[in-house]
Amino acid sequence: MTTRGVLYVHAAPRALCPHVEWAVAGVLGVRVTLDWIRQPAAPGTWRAEFSWQGEPGTASKLASALRGWQLLRFEVTAEPCATAEGERYSATPELGIFHAVIGMHGDILIPEDRLRAAMQRARKGEGDLEAELDKLLGKPWDDELEPFRYAGEGAPVRWLHQVV
Image (cartoon, rainbow, N blue to C red; front, side, top):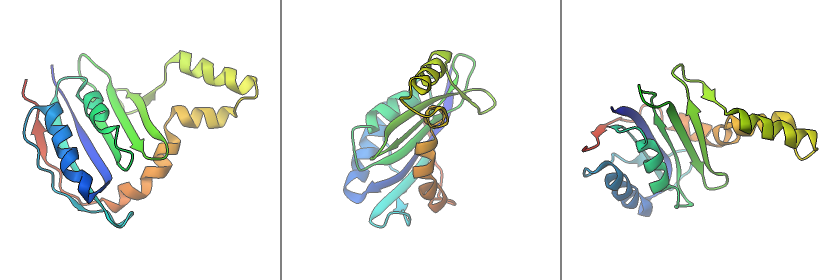
């Protein structure tokens, strides 16, 4: 069974670009050369995106391979398939990494234990319920990445297939 998704590198310093390609190639098992373009939302950085196809769990592997670089802003998505829900990973230097399970209609699916924990923190006065729910939905990451998403409209997309 395979799934497919997209890796969006929203902003990377030029020196980091080849390292991103090597990390992605290590996960996909094929040579990767991305088409880097300037990122106008953060002068001095570059962006790239491409579509991939692979086994369920590939998005997680891609996010893990890229998460250690603090100067990198990226997102990885995977479509749902017959054996797995979809996924979305978002990462920023300030917030770290966010993970969401995505249902077949594109909605974020939040496990009930995480909802209960958010309600409990709000009841104890440890946080506002709305802010807790915003975190569960990835709103802080969306807010931070939104200018980078718009800046990248019209960028080329390339399909890469994982060797199985």
